[in-house]
Length: 93
Image (cartoon, rainbow, N blue to C red; front, side, top):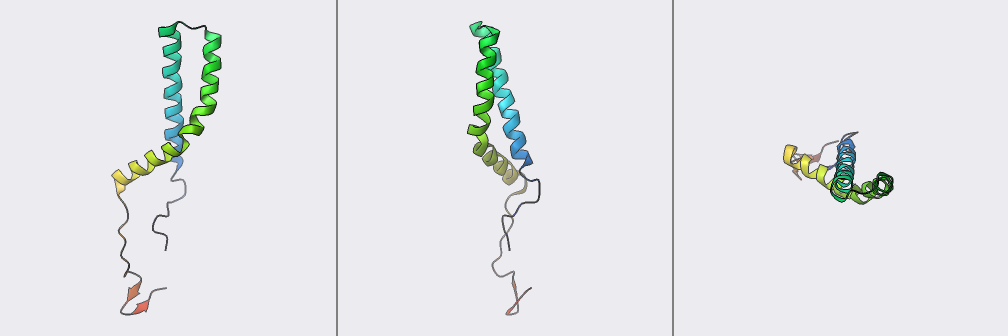
């Protein structure tokens, strides 16, 4: 009995959250560097490339947590009944 077993492809949403958050962070940094700081475009590309390599790895576990929290809000946890395996003293198979 696996109470917390998820179906195949469940954590694709977590990967999606990681990719979307990374793209959003890169976009914000790009706009900030180009519009606010007025930095050279070549140096901004170097910063964005480094960020694109580091940010997804650093945010990986957080994206899984966000996805599990979203799933909990939408579906909640399955109800666990410890006596559901037994019927009138005999174990189900």
